[in-house]
Image 1 (cartoon, rainbow, N blue to C red):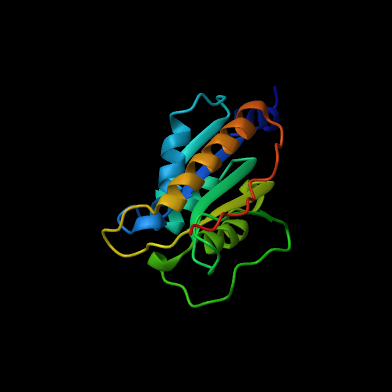
Image 2 (cartoon, helix red, strand yellow):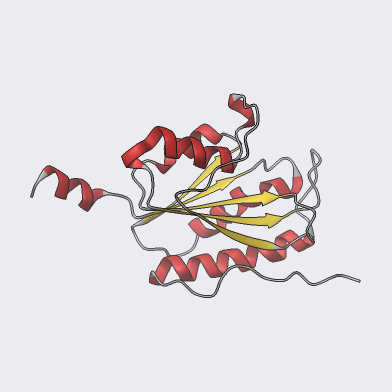
Length: 177
């Protein structure tokens, strides 16, 4: 087998990267999702990584993966527990802001990875974002986010296990009243 063929045979197929700070309430959604996914029975070609708050670790973890799913919290003003899935195409760019090593978010990590990893950048990147409502130090996960975590884990586990693309992870949050 050629060196190129051997590299393709050993290439990681799918990587799920959880981003977030578990000490800041709903910001810990990414690490919690990868923790739960890691307990599922997944194929050998799937690996789950908790990148925590280190965008650089997320960039480095992407190298060699064919597909990457980044899971993180969002704070867009939507209803807590809303799940959004974003396909990151070749022309996608992260918002331009001043960055420091400790302020690299998931979107910046993807943009930086595309630039730094060149041929080692995944061919497919998807971001799965769960809208949070509690982000203060010491907060726990909100009930809406706990419910969304279960839905994301169930659907991602199914998608990763059979290789198909089941229904979108998007869902409409219900209003609590």
